[in-house]
Each structure stands twice: as C-alpha cells, then as structure tokens.
Length: 138
Picture 1: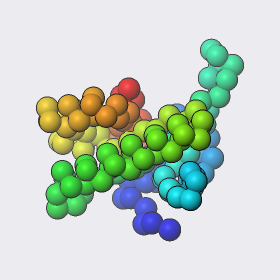
Picture 2: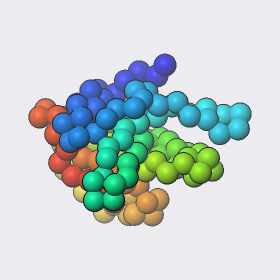
Picture 3: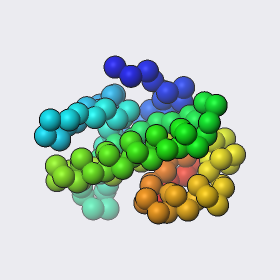
Picture 4: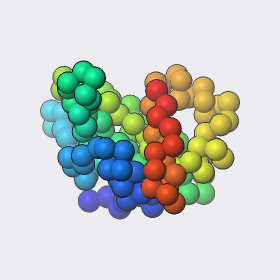
C-alpha cells in the first residue's frame, strides 16, 4: 500500500465534519487489467435531490523539492482516475485535496490556474490544522 500523505487524516476528518461518510480508505478500483488506488472514497445524502453524491479524493501536500514535478504526478493521477471511472460508467466526482497553505502559496499561480482549468481539475481546499473544508473548487 502506498504511504499516506501528510494531510491525509486532516482531509478525512474535514470530510467527516462536513457530513461525508468515508466508504473506502484507500479506494481501490480497476479497469480491465489495471488497478488504481485513490486515497479516499466518500458519500453523503443530498437532501434537496434525495440522492447520494459520491466522491473520490486524491490527497496531496506538495512538500517535495519540486512543486511542478509533484503537480505533474498529481495531474496524471487525477486524469487516470477520471478516465477509469468514466470508462466504468461510475458517477463519482474526483477531487484533488490540498491544504489551504498550498492553495495560497502555489495554486494561485496563473500557470497552475491555467492547468487546473485546462484539465478540469476539481480541488478541495482544507485547513489541515483545523481539519475543516475551506473551499470546493469546481
């Protein structure tokens, strides 16, 4: 099993505080002969629609020596999760979870914003210290 990200538990607790039920930690899924492992799968009841919403979350701290190298890896993972889930006919929405510090420090860059828009990356921003969701970015 891959090592957990530094903010993994903070993201998980923030989701629980926000009313999400953790279904899998980690979340294994496969398409044909290849398997992937995302960090979390969670669900919650959407009362307005009387339906459930399920998400897949990839948690990243971006604490390594090269932010851009880690971003390349994260974007690749994100795209693979979306592609596999779509091919399987699954309805889960994929999110990249990051800390509010990373969001303010690295994700405000015009280059990063362009990449997020280009690849349709949905971002979950979490205050890791308070274990609270700060923002959902569609």
